[in-house]
Amino acid sequence: MEGYRVIVTGRVQGVFFRASTKEAAERLGIKGFVKNNADGSVATTFMRAPQEEQFLEWLQKGPPLAKVDGFEMETIVLEEAFVDFQIRY
Image (cartoon, rainbow, N blue to C red; front, side):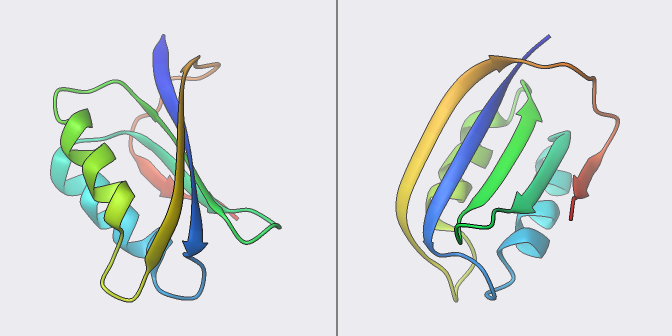
């Protein structure tokens, strides 16, 4: 199963990025997860979906308090099928 891994950098921790990402994903029917990385970035992994372009556009901006400076995306083969969108710790 094909999906995406996205790493977002900038002011993306402590600004409700994960919670807002979960809300955006659920609104768009995206299944996967989001988590903070130790280096201050936020990572999300998700399955392909009809609304993926809108979700990718959202990730490049983030919530109002965030300031996205970097956005890296790669297409990956997923090791699991997701049934919802989760915040992972």
